[in-house]
Amino acid sequence: MNPAGTDLNLRPSRIAWPLLIAIGGLMLFGLAFVHSSTLGDTSTTMKQVVWFAVGLAAAAGLCFIDYHILARWAWVGYWLAIITLVLVFLVGSERNYARRWIELGPFQFQPSEFAKLAVLLALSQFLSRPIEELRFTNVVFKTLGMVLLPFVLILKEPDLGSALVLIPTMVAMMFVAGVPVSILGRILGVGLVIGGVLVADVLFAPEKWRILRLREYQRQRLMVYFGKEFTPKNATPEQKTYYRDLQRQKGWNVQQALISVSSGGLTGKGWRHGTQNALGYLPRLGAHNDFIFSVIAEESGFVGCIFVVGLYTVVLFSGLKIAGQARDRLGRLLAVGVVAIWFTHVFINVGMNIGLMPVAGIPLPLVSYGGSAAVCGLIAVGILQNVHLYRRSY
Image (cartoon, rainbow, N blue to C red; front, side, top):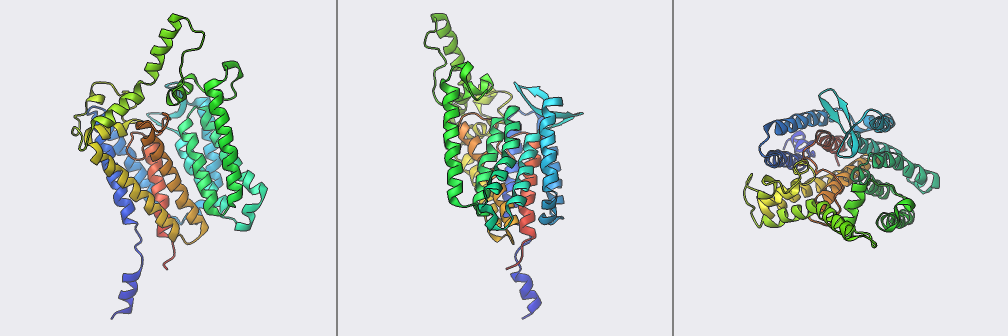
């Protein structure tokens, strides 16, 4: 027997094949249903192909650099992300009541998507310190501050969905880093109390007494989700009619998404044969973004939904496996952070399409249309592959 050959056969694979195969499946599925949800708009589909190519090139480039070297530049990336988030308010373009994009000639990018990756790298670098230091109050508060700053800036755009992604990502990374459960419990307890107070504030407080100044359309989305009546108590008959129509209008997208999901049945109506989107019941600007899962459900049915969720499951479990095999805490934190970001995106997007979550404007990774989201999603995959590639052979 050849010892060298035996060593070669026992050496772990340098490529996480299940992860990459699942990512390829999601990209193909995404292109197919972006094309369908835009009613065969080839130009939109080709733009997504270009963004996928850019993201794949960036992800491949990451594999040539050890993640320890990347981590050395984490703080540079973090502050660059903060600067771009500030620039959004100065030179950003406004669409649909939100200022989230920066125009660069024919291209535009969404800084909040890149900020998630910057926070991921910075948190990984910061929390990979000796585990004894994670018990210090100043370290915990610095961690909270690192997330609070981009959270507030993103929330101000406003982009509630992207801001919320940072919270479970931070909690998951703190837990894996070794922050005591007692401290995490107190943080979560305070967070739940603050969240409950703010929801009550939005739903019940008079306008002049509200603490959280959300845009009106955001407040209305929460009111629809919690079933809160729009009509004031002392409304005139004319006002009652107006508010009933307004509430019906604001709940329209959620109702139509639920109809799309339920009408698909077991195997769906067939690719590009869905009626909800074709007849304009789903929002034209959201069918290929926020509500693409409902298009998938209507056209490919329960089988298609399970297939997509299955691909995401492979990605998430591959990420957890990579985290478990990482050679150090830095690699483990990077992998867990990517898994947390992806899981939160999938959970919120699918949840809002089936009525479990309020509409938050968050894309389905590599399936929804969007340049910044596609590129950042593939960069995150590149980080996972990087951690896998540079792990030690056990």
